[in-house]
Image 1 (tube, one colour):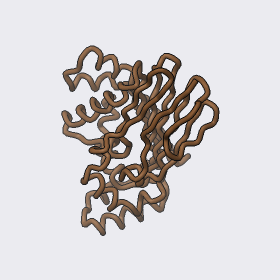
Image 2: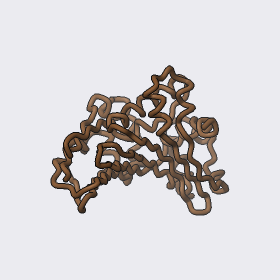
Image 3: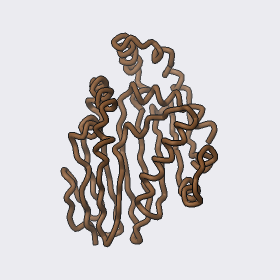
Image 4: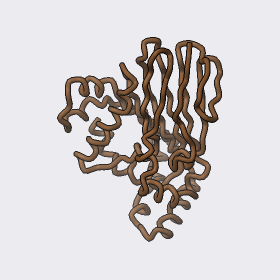
Length: 246
């Protein structure tokens, strides 16, 4: 776990300057428990073109700090690791329930210079869907306590999920999603995020009956939604709605 957090300042800069794709997946069990997995695909930074783009950004912004990072170093890295978030609780005054939640949460990191793969994933195994939001609240708090910032939350939508009587309801925290600072930074990075994709997938134990989610595609027990990354970040695409399943 400590090894992962040593790299946090590196990823903070990376996420603020690169093109990423996000895949969030909800695996729902019959009793309402399940797994939430959000994967940040940063593989584009391993391509030669990225270094030129980063240099251009530094010149435009007048910030030379990003030019000090040599992403070419990742070409020699081969890493596939999973770290429990349990130790994160040691920096916080967590309740017994929160400590249990952290023990069921993980960070996955996959870097392969040879295969040009660079991914970070956060996994939350929840007993109740409300624990997804609770985990990320704890995650952000832990980073603030450490004086570090891994801005993953800025690159995914606020996730408020409830599951009752074979109905999943997702609502959005519009106040956070339209935060002016996030909006300004997203607009400035538009040239990098223009082609980025934000995909949401929901897997249910039985067939889906209907949904109110805009742009959703249903295939049996799987519902998928694909949006432009910037549209999601700037609240131009709405991921909220209901999914009714058998």
